[in-house]
Length: 193
Image (cartoon, helix red, strand yellow):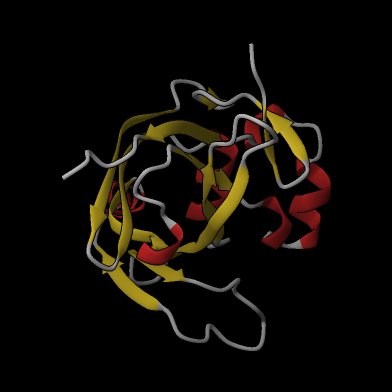
């Protein structure tokens, strides 16, 4: 089995899932005039411990990463683009409403910054929104060479580093907190015109 390099760590290039029944159901790549877009449908159930914490008002954080690598036969593949999207899902027990914030930068305690915020009436609606990626721009057009083959590595995970400290300590080494879904797909050269 071949391995790909992701942020200095070796990871399997195909689908990897560490939560029960977690997978990328569909991954679509679309070339457009202004860049490369990714669409994906994720299929996973949030780990029970994370779902329980959500219902108690503890927000959960997720991270989606996409890397675009240009294939090279003579050396390791060259990273040409990398982008990240951050998610914060929270539940308000008093109003029984779900809030999803999406940002291009990590969330900080100093404020949410520039984010897209959506409210949902149910947990299922909020999770469906997290699991669906539609036309996410992952690379500018000028970095995608028309006559070269590229590989796109997509990864979605639960971000344990942004949980409150007691949860981080209690979650270390416990499989009930694991959620990682990843997939790689090749983007062929454009046909000659």
